[in-house]
Length: 340
Length: 158
Image (cartoon, rainbow over all chains, first blue to last red):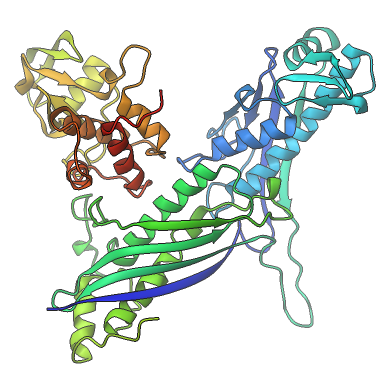
């Protein structure tokens, strides 16, 4: 028995959101008389951080502290329409919609403040700490709370804004048939190292090194947690999990968490991640978003690493010990490839 | 079927309930005590999110008959925070982004507490072993392991 070390890499070019345009999401922003703001969405936060990121985007656009923004989401009966949390579209699509809504709300807020301070709205600025003051004259100031109260009880104004983000529909070039599938691409490269046991066919993860280019990371810790957790899911898809281990007979499918194999805490490996920020021209504050591409490059990188280790090319996922062993037997033994 | 009277300690408080024979502890805690912190994941001991401590020992509440805990002391996540302050483990989980969707978190925290209560300075391998009965879909486990090690080492923000 020998354990063979192999290294493989994969690069991906990942389009953000659904292809060929459309793909709308809406957001509504309004202030409460307390001077706090509510963002209404029906976009779902599954734990990836949509609520945190849209909250940041709204606060930054309005010019108020992030503590003053509350995101109310996940009720499609009452929230404005969203296509959904998929296709790595949340930060980009929903973020843009929130930004548009917050911009409109900010316009009303500044008008209301101008009326209270008896100045021109164009001469006002926010300090990001909950106050609006005259440019160059910070003592001529009013809190966003007092503006909200004045708008509500005196001026009869709703400090609110509507936002939608809709990608223009792609046209077809009649000569070439060429279309524009996406406006925004994220990129990644991942190197995986594995040990392959040529007696059992088992593949053990040794380490991963990756670089992700995903526009501006609006919340770097959330980006990192997405990349760490997503890579685990990539390992799981590459080596462990499938609802149909013996397709097409569903009788042999896993029935529960005990039979549905996934890597446990003892099966993970060190993962070094570099995040490169190249702001997207059409992203909210330059963001693209991590999303699905956290998992995607792991699968081909692991398959390549297995080839590098023992010379077998498995093109059927997951790459189980049985498949590795059969392939090694079929080629008459392990054939380690050159290390690069 | 007649109801069975049952008394036990729940997070340091004496409670008394009537349960049907065959009721599992998870249902008793959630539906009769109103403690929603132990979660129902699989109902067959495969995921760990229903984990509670019984007399300080980690147990799967979905596989524990409620009537077997009479007179014993049950700890759940609901009793973990100390007054208004988070338990160091909870603080460490937040600091290390050890929760995403949060469904596994109650079980992870109870498994971690069971470990640190008996072994205040575990090795990484011991942490891995301690949470190996708990499934997480989001985090990739690494942030959870780091959070538990940080809590054990006292490296937790105030």
